[in-house]
Length: 211
Image (cartoon, rainbow, N blue to C red; front, side):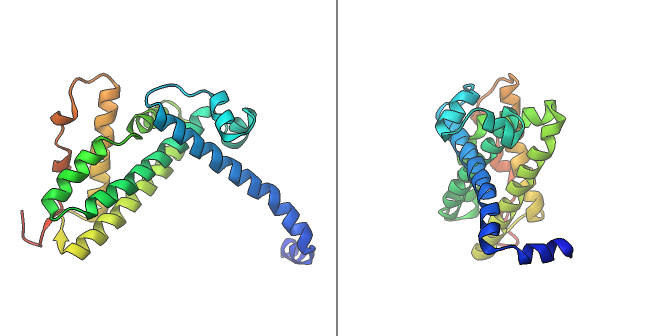
């Protein structure tokens, strides 16, 4: 209570001055994540250095460790930012589907062609090998799952579609299949996208009784 009272008594100018460094810090973090995501998309599979990231964001290299603790942590944030951007583009593709069968095919095809997948595969591997990054990976995965669940449930409600399982399970199962396939390829498993029936991981169908 005392701290709150003191804050109220602080002159407006003083409060604004204290907020400015926080705003600048948030803007710097956002810029670093965005520029890292852009570099990773432009050079899929290539290693991006801290110096390159800092130069693209217009900051000093030590800002990476100051704001994120490590380059790996920044790469995780950037990978999932790219994935969420890709997911929004894929949602537009899904809305254009004339029926549920086309939706399943189009979504699966688009996901397997996402530019962010190599970066996300590296982020998932980092979460496995570096336990301190696991909570960051989990935070972004939960956001992806929730966003996808809302999307497919609203679309199904609008179109009169149904699914063979709850929509939260539908979203988790689909993304787990897609990301698991990417990790297998990154680990050296032979095969192509044609070998994976990702559309089969979706149970959305036309009408309550359709197959």
